[in-house]
Image (tube, rainbow, N blue to C red; front, side):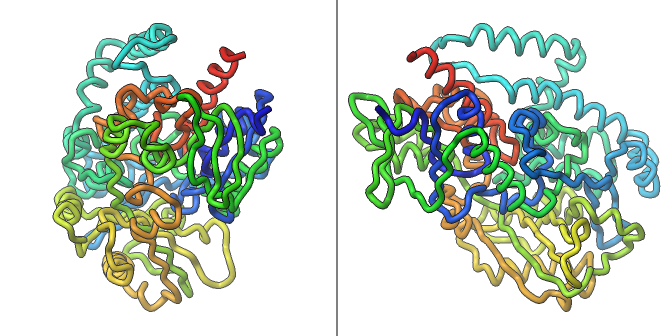
Length: 506
């Protein structure tokens, strides 16, 4: 008898979500995480506002200690040459603030917010569905297609036409149709580029922007939610939920290879040499790792390895942690509560695009696009403060000291004197993220969320239904549909497909 029904290889948030759902269904499940603690990139992504409500409710995460702090200020765009722009959870309140820079844009904002919410509603339906197999027909495709067709029809003729027009667009083009002020356009469009290797003028970034608001209350400004107790609290709640459902969660257990026989999975072998048997293995790592490192090349075959090797994973985001002796004085910020959400430094569309251009040609801009949070505003920690900064378009092997210097210089322009408050700096470049978390290329979404790696094409065409071409081998990480971010969606969807296969197998 196998040791388990399912082994979940990788203890990131999607792996824990997948394991919890499987264990709730009565399956014997083990989660194997190579690091000393589970949770994965919840330690890097500084907000959890996209965590699906269904995942929170189904796994009873609140009972396991999860509490999300949702500030009224979703985002503040800090500026060198003018007052900041604050985007509140209330669209009308946001509009009133924008009126100081543009009356026309202020009038447009509530309508744009409603527009994004409408489009995001359909995208949320797509995210909750299992993609069809476009290379050949598969069981269930017709029913799934019918559900999506009904959701599409519910949009109405105008919204449906708008959806098909908008999703392939560049985010800069989308926001440019609604707003004239460059700082407003940059703050909104840049959200379609975070964690990607695309700039605001890249095709498909409008899809990234809309998808970021799908299944949550984000709207045009995006959702912001900070786990009370920090990322460790979110990871702890997920571990407790998985264990309460009956899953075994092991840390310090590094998977070295997937064991196969006669074209099907039989378990895994750890780096220690220990072998653990199971008829199903759900990989919560990126698809390149699963298919090119863990799977025997003979078993995978040259075609699958070639396709997996071409999955685009260009990490371009660095995380910088700053310990501060006091709260920085941000230029012209009159309402301190506006800093409780995400603070972005995106001076204009061209400035953001130029930062992308610098990365595209192997460098890092002196004016990088930044998104930061100050979690100690919501949860004080002694006399000082902590700031987490995500810097976009940082070369893979960038010098951490150079990255830190450029980020601090960019912050000085909107928070004069911040450098004098810094007591320590920790920089994680894409290369460091790859080493620490095992992500190919250091890509925080496991695979680029471009149009060619979306829905039925994620991670590659024919493998979008969470099955990786070998009987018993599955993908439940962010490289699977519906993609990256702290959502739990890939883990939830994968668990549904694994359970369906296990029931069929008897």
